[in-house]
Length: 219
Image 1 (cartoon, rainbow, N blue to C red):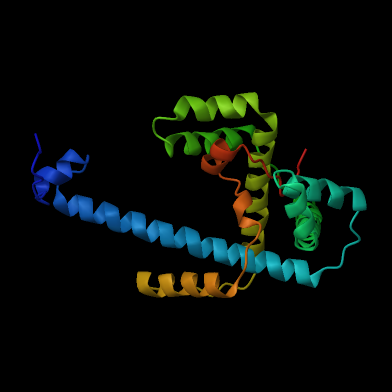
Image 2: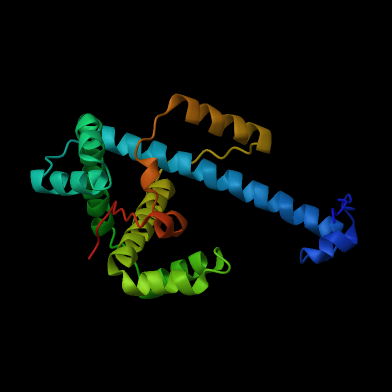
């Protein structure tokens, strides 16, 4: 038997089936989610811009052993021929990561920034909540992989330093529409290459590929 598809009526009943009060509430929640997504993307662009400026403004003697360790992390999943082919670009990424790590760690230490255990637990809980149906796997992943928890701690530490820099810098606030935000994001992607983006620190990607990346190491 072939079942005939019927058009879904978008009304209060449909909205309630999705867990909202009514259609108006559903529209508000969807709009809020869209705005939050754009804000996250714009914050990421702001962070990238800050890191690029910091990296260009400072000269640092990089310990070769740290560079080689980072290079090994970047290329460990690549085939030998691919690693050789992309060696120059991978070395640039490794040097930039180590340089930024050293600079940001120094800023963090000078300003007595630390990541409390509760902050780490809160961030893990956020990731658990963002992956319905995989809560147990996410918790087990962090329990069985101390390096993953250390990487997450490093990400929180980095965010604290970036927020400190933003607080101390001259702020210029500008309100943009979702259309303007989309244009900014699209233009950025057109003019920037991000070979390191594939090594995202987010758990969703890590759980699928088992890749772990450390940008900042904090004891």
